[in-house]
Structure formats: structure tokens, C-alpha cells
Amino acid sequence: MRHWLLTIALALLVLPSPAAARVQVQAYALPPGGGPHDVAVGADGIVWYTAQRSGHLGRLDPASGKVDLVSLGPAAAPHGVIIGPDGAPWVTEGGTNSIVRVDPRTREVKHWPLPGSRGYVNLNTATFDRRGRLWFTGQNGVYGRLDPASGDMQVWDAPRGRGPYGITTTPAGDVYYASLAGSHIARVDVESGAATVIEPPTRDQGARRVWSDSRGRIWVSEWNSGQVSRYDPATGGWQSWKLPGERPRAYAVYVDDQDKVWLSEWSANALVRFDPETERFESFPSERANAHVRQILGRPGEVWAPESGTDRLVVYRTR
Amino acid sequence: MTARALALLVGGAATLGGLAPLRADPAGGERVFQRCMACHSVTAGEVGLPGPNLHGVIGRRAGTAPGFRFSPALVGAGARGLVWTRETLDAYLADPETFIPGTEMGLPPLRSADERRDVIDFLERRTR
Image 1 (cartoon, rainbow over the protein chains, first blue to last red):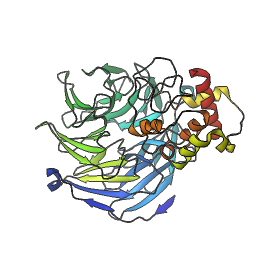
Image 2: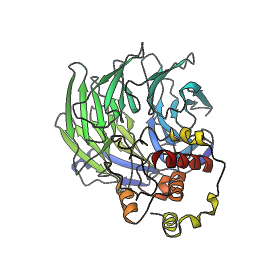
Image 3: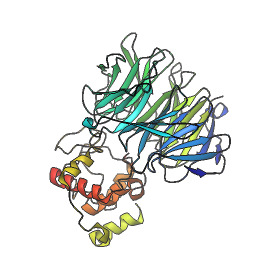
Image 4: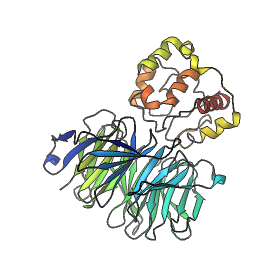
């Protein structure tokens, strides 16, 4: 493990929009060359991120700005990270084609490799169901389940081949994933493992990531169409909204504790907050070019965005 | 575009003595391409994937594959003369963000020269 002591809080920005009164933005510089891809914040406020370019898992203490790096091995190229029910960071580790847990106290790294018969699946993102089992996507056309208690892992072929990308669990425990190449979302039966395709109304929209709101409605960031869409499992209905700007492209989506929807929009190089009640967007442009935010995650009052193109983690504090 | 990219445009392969032939592994190229196949097709005419179709990529000006919306960084690199050759592909795959700052391709650096050679062999074979 390498230690980095960094200058605390390089920037506390004052935004020119009305959102300035309600949202404070703070950027944390990370060790250069890491390319932070995904981020997760635990209940204790500690932030973990995947340094995909350098093959590390990073740990940021926002109170001090101190960053530690945990090496995941010479071949590592970690994509996603989430906090498990055990409080540990769990990683979809694309470089070694394995699921990885890092002990938050000892920093021990444990691998669960995918079955060799599956080949390289291009692991993407993970989520836990309510029984403590980890579900993951592989962009080459699979999704799977790991039971950390038994070590049992199952992998299924995605119904339409390559594409499975973002994945989420609803408050009721249902699991959904998005297929970027397949332009659909799918609901996974967490007992049988069967996936049911659900077609968004916009053709070839490029559903990239998904997140659930407090009512179990599924929000979808659409890369090709530049829309955010909402699927209501109770009615089967869809609604879509185009993000602001010219030819927007929505990469990541996250729904915060107030059911506000956050998206990263690459054409404007901005994070965007959508209020479903007013149907209005607020934009928070990065002050650095090519921020390339590929995922968003938070906890009550905090929304975290890794800027993969600037080696920074940015937090949007909403209260 | 970085100084290295510019050097490749100006000097071509002569600037890359380090690219001497290594042991080729035809099956290895297909295996390495598994890291790319979620976004790229090598089948002529197949569109709709998150990355551009790579059929005919060798010899093509960067950012110009038909039917794909490229990042401003790739379009700019192409406008400045970047053409995909074995050498420029090697440099790009070795570290995409450094070779073309602002590229949106999500591939982490492909550090193994053997793997880069194999996957470029595969692209030459399958997309000409």
C-alpha cells in the first residue's frame, strides 16, 4: 500500500447558478495517473474509488484529504466499486476478470475469479441484493451472482449478448441492469437468475446506467439519445426527458436521498441535477476540461463524482 | 495531440525502433480483442455499438469512421492528420489518454507490447 498526503480541498467553488445557495462543490486531487473510474462512499464517510489506469483501489478520507492506495496486482484494471453490507469495498476487477473484496481495516485483498470457461467478460458494475449476494455485469454479454458466504458464483448469458453495464437494486430488493450495446434494461429474478428484457420507448437509446428511486422506479441514463428515462415497474410505463444543451450524452445516473436525479453529461462537461417534481435541470459544469465522469454515487447529503479525466473526486454537498 | 503523437505523424515508423517484431500469437490477438468487443465490431457495416466499427481501421484517418459520433478529441486528431497505422495504434493502445488527451475510449492502458502487437495483427487480419 502506498500513502499519499495531499493538499486538502483544492477548490471550493462558488457556482454561478441559483443552485449555488444549496449545493457546495468541493474537489479533491488524487495521485496523478490513476484515472478514477467509479466511487463509493460508506456510512462512515470514507470514500473508495477505482484507479483503473494504475490498478489500485483508492481510499480518501474527506476530513483530512489523505489518500491511500491499495494495489490490486500488476494486471489489475478495476472498473466498479460499491460498499457491501459488511462495510467493505467490493470491486468488479476487469484486469483479472474477478470480483475483489478489500478489507477496510487490514487492506487484505481477496479475489473470486470468474469461471475460466467464461473467458474474459469485461466486468463492469456490481450491486448487492437483500440477501447479501453480489450481482455483477460483464459487458461482453453476461451477468452473474456471487454469494460471498459460500463462494458460490453463477454466470448467465445476457439475453441479447454484449452490453450489460450499470446495475442497481431497488428498495424492495429487485435487481435491474442496463445494456449499453443492447439499448434496453433488464430485470433479474434474484432467485432463478432469469433476466427479462424491458424495452425503453426510444430506439437505440444506449441505456448505460440505472438507478432506483425510493419508490422503486428505475432511472436510466441514455448515452446515445441524451435522455434520462424513468421506468415504473408498477405500471410498465416510461417517461423520458432530454438533457439540456446541444447533442447531450448522458453517461452516469444516481438518485439521491431526496429523489433528485444526478447525471453526468459529457457534451457540456457537467454534472446535471434533475428534479422530477418540477421537471427542471440544473447544471454544474466542471471547471476542468474533459472531466469524463463515468459513475456517480453518494450517501444522504453527498453526491460523489469521479473525474476520470482530471484525477479528481468531486463531492456535491446538498445540505 | 501530444508530442509523441506529433512525432508519429511526422516520422512514422522510423521513430519507433522499439516496435521491432516480437513473437506473434494469432490466437492471442483474438483473446486480447475480448477487451474491445463490447464496444467495437470488426464486421463490415455493423453499427450501433458504443465504439466505432473497426473494419478497415488501418489506414483510416482518426475520427472518420462512418456512422459514429466521435469525441472532439478524436475528430481534432484526425483533422490534424492522425492516420491509424500499426505504429499509431500501438501508441494509442499503450496509453489512450496520453496519446490523445480527451479521448472518450474507456480502455485502460494496454501495457504489454506483445498484446498490442497481437491485437493489431488481429485487426489487420480481420478488418482489411
